[in-house]
Each structure stands twice: as C-alpha cells, then as structure tokens.
Length: 128
Image (cartoon, one colour):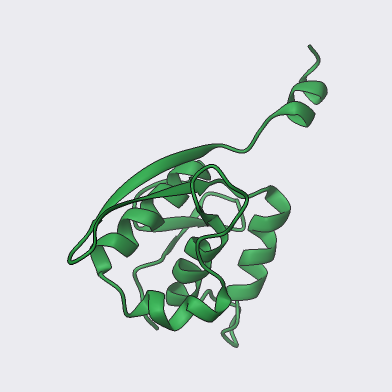
C-alpha cells in the first residue's frame, strides 16, 4: 500500500479512560485524537491574547470538549456550554482526560500540548 493510501485510510486513535468520580463512581469516557484541521482550529481559537500567546486554561478545556466522547458513539461528552462546569470539576478527573487527549494526539508530556504542531510545548496548567 502506498503511503498516501495508508494516510487516507487511517482511523483516528482513541482510548477508553476510566475515571473515578467521588460520589458518582467509575465512568468511562472515550478520548479520540483530533484531525490536523481540528487541531489547528483549536489552536486558532485559543490564541486570544494580544501577543498571540495561548490561553492555557481555555486550551485545556477546549481540548477536553473536542476529544471526549460517549464510548462507542459519535456523541461528544461535553459541549461548549459545559466550559464553566468543567473548570469547576475535580482537577484529577480533568487532568486524566487532558492527559489522554494529549496522548491520543501524539503530543509530548502530560501537562503540555504542542503549539502549532511544531514541537514547541505550551503549558496547559497555566490559568492566565
């Protein structure tokens, strides 16, 4: 198979993540990688600071909104209206989803995403 054909047929990577939510118990979330187009769209969306830097908090929450699915479906687990709720949720559960999203995207480290897909890390734990 030619490389071009292989890329055209490749499926998005995904992982089922189990998260224990206090007072709720274990839940399963499917975390899927984004396409290159989706990744660039997300990066454009979160580069809102006047100097062009990324808003780390917004990048983290938008990454989770874009990659978390109800397992085995095409239904996103969250939508943009859930942004504030996600920011008020348990940090460990949030970090578990963010780590899985970064892993699915092939990005480095647990607390960083790659800026503009160029190997320049952006700290997503920043709240400024």
